[in-house]
Amino acid sequence: MGGGGGGGGAARVGLSRLMSVAFVLLALSGFGVHAGRSRIHKKVHGGGGGGGRHRGGGRGGTVVWSPAVPPADERTQPVTPPPGIVPSDPAVPAQPEQCVFDVRAFGAVGDGTTDDTEAFRAAWKAACAVEAAVLSVPSDGTFTITTTTFAGPCNPGLVFQVDGVLMPPDGPDCWPPSDSRRQWLVFSNLDGLTLRGTGTIEGNGEEWWNLPCKPHKGPNGSTLRGPCDSPTLIRFFMSRNLRVEGLRVENSPEFHFRFDGCSDVRVDGLSIRSPETSPNTDGIHVENTERVAIYNSKISNGDDCISIGTGSYDVDIQNVTCGPGHGISIGSLGVHNSTACVANVTVRNAVIRNSDNGVRIKTWQGGMGAVTGISFDTVVMENVRNCIIIDQYYCLDKRCMNQSTAVRVADVSYANIRGSYDVRSAPIHFACSDTVPCTNITMSEVELLPFSGELVDDPFCWSAYGLQQTPTIPPIYCLQDGLPDALLDNPDLRCR
Ligand SMILES: *[C@@H]1O[C@H](CO)[C@@H](O)[C@H](O)[C@H]1NC(C)=O
Ligand SMILES: *[C@@H]1O[C@H](CO)[C@@H](O)[C@H](O)[C@H]1NC(C)=O
Ligand SMILES: *[C@@H]1O[C@H](CO)[C@@H](O)[C@H](O)[C@H]1NC(C)=O
Ligand SMILES: *[C@@H]1O[C@H](CO)[C@@H](O)[C@H](O)[C@H]1NC(C)=O
Ligand SMILES: *[C@@H]1O[C@H](CO)[C@@H](O)[C@H](O)[C@H]1NC(C)=O
Ligand SMILES: *[C@@H]1O[C@H](CO)[C@@H](O)[C@H](O)[C@H]1NC(C)=O
Image (cartoon, rainbow, N blue to C red; front, top):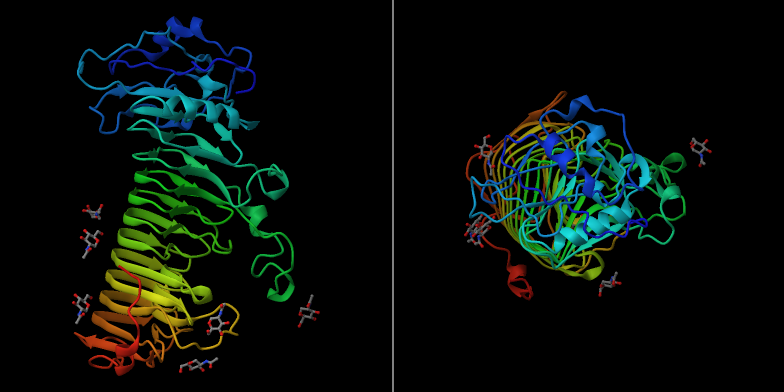
């Protein structure tokens, strides 16, 4: 905090639901300790639209106060009740108090240009120390912060509530030289964090996409040398029991979300959006993470909608709409002869439109490990290239040598996959390894027709074993019964 010095800036106010917030603010305003940092903002955002009141999520239904309610002029006085006074809601006396830590009370300005990093760090520190705390980013501000790790352990029930706009500095030239260029918001070592809100996390990614090192940015599709690191917008690391709900997240410099080393993650109701031409802007990337639910979200971007990397288990994806983009992808796996394991991934009730791929599994030659137990069930395709694709020859520069090992792909089912394909590619493409063929692929009710133009009636199919439970459209003839002999020699790997 820039010279504020007062760590006690938390707005620890619990109110019964109909009490006039403005009145209470006036009553408490004498306790403000940050007058030197506060500024009066005349800008009134009419569009606050109901975002003002927040219910204590699941915490006994306590209605908590957030400064989004009163008009801007009154709000800018930070509120600090005297120590020891924690008003409680008489209607629910037995419930735990939910404490709101408004970043403005810690000196954040939220005018779109001031660096509010220190205020966020101070607010986090205070919220982390209290049970069932809400760090609040109010709806009428645009807050800029630099690369920050919000680290735990923290007390249970912590909520990071973004109702306004939160964003990083605008592009590499504005990035503080000492900050990581690989990540921006990092949540690490947490148990039970919820990130949610009605606001927007704006990535300001454009300058990063235009770095000359990015694919297709050099002349004639070449790439030029130069620094290439670009930050993942929101990264969760070594954490569990996470929820991410309701936010709009857009224009990330690189991946929008990355979960690594986490477990028990639930993502619900996100809207993720970047231009179709933005490179490497995967919507949600998951790796080394288990028990992940991704529900009811809409993702459009310039790379994978959802990408699932090694060490991912028990991933449930439902009601996701993707596109434009590169579809839902497992992989790439096994790069540089590495061992990769992914198991038990379900994708159900998805819509994929205007995408370079639909549902994809991609592995490199030379890898080891396995992708098993994958179910794609009820997916609507609309003008998608490679609607269904398994590629065990994945390679970025077309110069990869075939190897004697590969990440095994087994027990993959495609059920009720319908819609239309872009005729520039075969709608079904199984390119499996000679030495480690794909096995137990089952297909039922797969019906894909050209979006426009002529039927592509020669799906690509190589070294694939499995069963058509109902005839597919277009028909494929190459799925072989049983198991290949070669597989019997493949040492079974260190997957669980
Ligand atoms: C790009 O391609 C065009 C046409 O082939 C060629 O005339 C031009 O020199 C190329 N530019 C560069 C920088 O390679
Ligand atoms: C697969 O993952 C789901 C969660 O998505 C879980 O409920 C189920 O038990 C897992 N199945 C196996 C066999 O582990
Ligand atoms: C998926 O959407 C359907 C229909 O809106 C809804 O009933 C169902 O609860 C959703 N599934 C999840 C996991 O949210
Ligand atoms: C992978 O292993 C093959 C065969 O042993 C070797 O030729 C190749 O150089 C290895 N590749 C990498 C990236 O280590
Ligand atoms: C690798 O193997 C596939 C399948 O047998 C074959 O089509 C392809 O030409 C091979 N690639 C190389 C570089 O040898
Ligand atoms: C084939 O895969 C399905 C899941 O798609 C699984 O239920 C079944 O047990 C597998 N069959 C064999 C023989 O492994």
